[in-house]
Length: 416
Image (cartoon, rainbow, N blue to C red):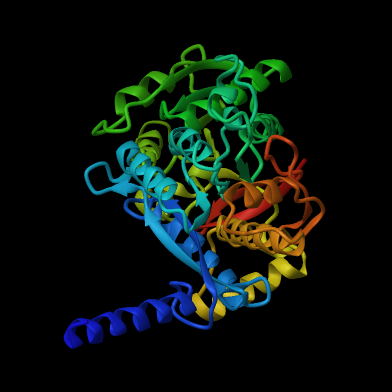
């Protein structure tokens, strides 16, 4: 054999043995498990989503970046599903992310999405890939897990394998919308006008609000979708200002996310109808972010109400309060409520991996990890003690309302 060829062959053999010893993961004979998140990191939602990413990073660091007694390294990658062109989540980008995750066999959990419309696109792709488990810290549209009354059977169509692979640690809009309608009535309102941004999340929660309003005796004066790209909404607000027999309604309910021109909508409402005590202005968690207040201006936003699933930071269990303390020690002051849901989502993924190992299974097996997620019961997490049901929904159903006071959201009550 040619000596030069033999020397080259020897080097290649030694290199291959070294890589095998490292498991392709960079040391210690440990293999690598990858967890990714897909959230909008471009646009107004960043004030919320960056805290979610930070919280996920914190939780993995607290676990030492390993699982199963150090047998596996666990790495986390944060992916953006928004584009500069749209300034918010982009269907093309989210679809690309889901396909990329499906193709990378080292990925065992997909944390996201933030927007329910994005989840609708990703769930079938990830379901067909193993399935690859998907855990959301923020999606709230009921139809992602439950039958949609407007599209019978739509939920099953999201799961081509017939196995559920999508779960969420936040309560759905069939709860949030109902609580919101009752809250508006508790404010003394008898008439309400409903607006939505025509997206899956915004229209979905507005529809639930409307149905509940009709059930409890609130008079719905109108319900329409807005153009999120409109320059202003003064004509719309002028129309609404006389919708109550020539007068303004007692309240306006908006189903939307901050990215869809939410601040401009509020500015035009106040310009036409006055402050938010005269005509109450109420929305869901999609506008419960500092970016909404900053975009409208503190004076304009004063008095706005918005709901968020769960309880405020000060009412979380000790584990939740510790999360906030640890977060602020690393990242600074925390006001965005969805941060703790990001932390809990990563905790769920890590627990599922550990449970697979404890049962003698293989955590590189996506189906095994997914089954472990759905088996979670009485989980003692930062949000409290809770379980997943067969649909992947959480057993926690509390809702907290916040009001803008002095330029920031302040909790004003938690409701069942």
